[in-house]
Length: 253
Image (cartoon, rainbow, N blue to C red; front, side, top):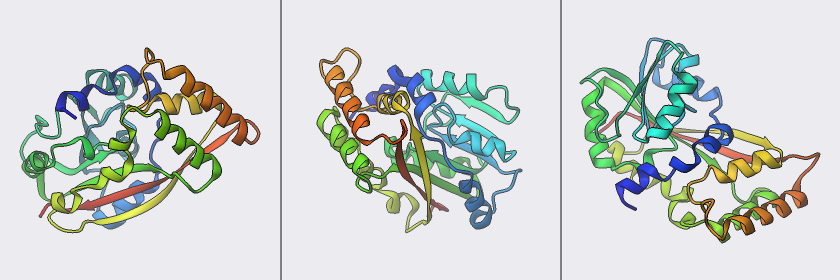
């Protein structure tokens, strides 16, 4: 995948991303307080911030957040949603070139984004902007794929219709983490969940970068199969997508 592809692959599905992607549980803040010394005065650089799903947690904690996002549509969505928050500052930048000042940041965070980075270049950039003893925190909402009959069938649908799902699915997200940190980072695993009606499930599916575009002949068959899948597994008009929030945090070695 080219750098250009990784920067633009969400541009045509920003609305679905904003409405239907899961956020992060408040326990993320609790973990960082207890294990990394996060305070309300810590300055955050949220890299690949998108529309602010992770930045929102830190704003609620009282932090100043530099939301660094290279995709224009995503960055504008974040500005529209969070720009009225006093601690929020939107930045047109990349993990490899954030445009932030030297030694100005206490925590560099990346939610659902590290696997898109050129990690050697981003490591050098994070070292530049972090204060002494600053932290890097990498997080993913990892969708569980085989813990319920619904999740198994949903995974099968993605494998059947996903344009490059096998290449970008979650197992590849954690490659190079040890090399990036210069050793094994600390970590935590937290539960997360979305309970969705059919419209929510449809929107969650269409928020993914690997599903067929609106012009694809695969789009309508995929949505028909999704409707059948929902009818089979719904209970009181809802299905549950279950996640594990995987956190990795440490100093850069």
